[in-house]
Length: 386
Image (cartoon, rainbow, N blue to C red; front, side, top):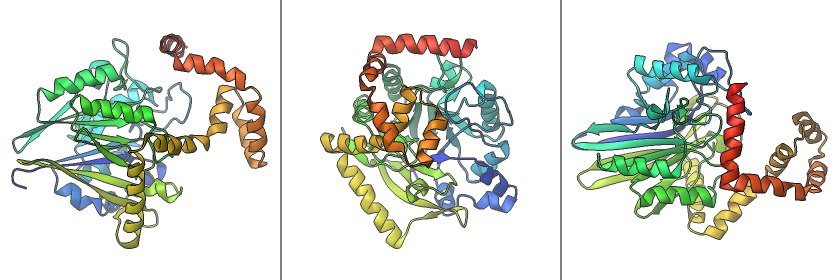
């Protein structure tokens, strides 16, 4: 590879029960990543985001939403595929508490795989990862949106949180120590191909303050990319390996392939898809590749027009409007399931909108920074004290 430094950055890897069953056969474990293996084999640094902790613990965290984990045996295909860095900042990393995170970190150390973006305390979670090869030094910083997952200064470990002020301080500090800074964030609205204007503004601010490449995942769908201030930003890589029979977008991903040499940083996006029947990743080719590249190009074009971007993002949010309004007004989940089964969701939505003025309370509490600080402090303390 001469004086080149080659890096691959991948999206979410889900160690579901199907993966555990599959990798019990050692040959299967070696072939799980299919066509991707050759690319990983010829690179210096390979990065992947495990969607949740690898742990044998059965002690679930107190939270709202899905509580997920992967069996420790599912760590083996990651090692065999030559991934050598895990980006651990994600919304599920504390689903089995600090012990689940510790077990995951222990597996990394046992298998000589580095990690970034999470730690047993805030300082470790916030620490950048530095990689040096062929005369080049790269820093990787990893952030996650704030759910039930994040570390907190002087209090507890978890994922490195998105905090624009602290994130930019860390980007600037890392820039003084290395040639290039890569930011990997876990955030955005799920099942939507477009970032919000807020998220776009956040990533562009990272670019203005020293980031040389910005990569996102979490939404489960591939998003577009743009070059802002000379900095490439891709808003979501999609799922690397998530064996669910969802729409085809669920099984699509792009790999960020970066090459750094004397001429600077170069990159390309390489599309793959998960073939569930063969249970392995395949590089897109032919008509499949052409159709995907057309959509990927369209997602990217939208990023250039703020009004159109907001329209497309808002259309995606509209599809889950009933879920958000039901949560805000305390509608039991069983009631939502019944109305969905009876195809009465439109009536439920009309009923919820009768209370639209009540939403103003929530709007003020959610939007005002001072109220945010107070609510988060009170509810987070109650959660950990209970």
